[in-house]
Image (cartoon, rainbow, N blue to C red; front, side):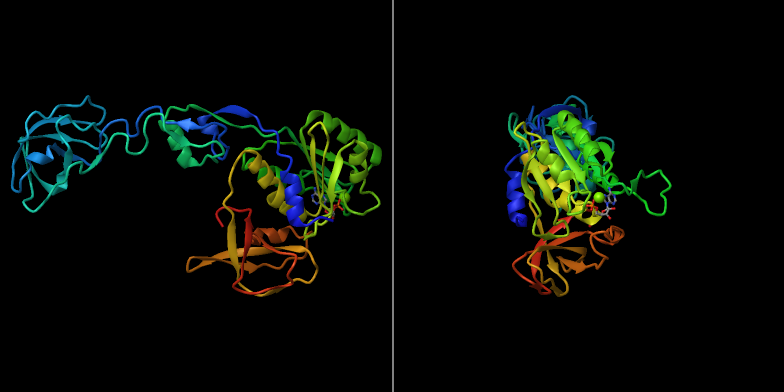
Length: 399
Ligand code: AMP
Ligand code: MG
């Protein structure tokens, strides 16, 4: 048995093979940037007027001055020239600041008619007032997004502004998601009394889809020969196998045997954690990676968020900042295992407070609907006091 930290290190020591692929910008959200993006021009690309009003030369200003309106310039117009400091140009937000002008006085700061603009007598103006100056946000050629950036709507705006109609992002390894178990029937089936509908692979597929990770789904019966030939086949076609069920100590839990027979080297079987203790992990010299998660739905869920998601993100050079939350009531947990406590988060005075939500064990996935994530309570303690902070593993947004 390995500790949670050891399991994590073993998994992270073999990064996923991720190659760049090009996607259209409108498919890039939540994907990870596989290139450094630079500004193709200064941002803003010109002295951008930031208020509707009148462009003036601040050096010619004096209180009570009346300007003659020499022209009008909308956003998108070629810039006019301010020829004389006693004149002004009526100007709109988004327009280029006219040559000779260095400030914009908003409409609300004065009185205008057809031909003149008179600022209120009490106002003062400063150079570059209400002007978003060329190149202040980024210089042409400057790196503005790093490789390993998770693309949010904010990055989509940045990418759009520098003309990236298509973006290089990391492609996910070819992945098969496999459920095992004779008791399981497809979601659309009507189960017999002794059967249950399969829920792990739909849940994991959904978790992966939020990152843009597409998978193919398979289901195999608990039959050694069937499992052997099916897994052998998948290892030929996919880089990563994520399997649920069939790795415990049951008579029909053939998966560890099958995998070893197929030369997938076991790197651990059993992690000192609850839930998810029977977790099996291994890889083959040809680079194939197998995560064999326990079938209990809460265990499979936890193992994905605690191990697989960080593994793929790290392989894509993403830095995950990590979150802590403060335990809101005392918890006792005797066994020398890391305990992943199911919690609901409430923010109180700026602090994330984690409230334990008791369920009926690792088979009770119905309980997860009341839960925002897991609080990781370390193995070397058995008393966890209210007010202590621990790593929080969210699986829900917003939480
Ligand atoms: P196992 O790890 O195969 O012993 O399965 C442990 C428990 O999880 C059993 O009660 C299984 O019925 C259940 N289980 C296994 N796989 C799934 C699945 N794909 N969906 C829902 N429950 C599952
Ligand atoms: Mg099973």
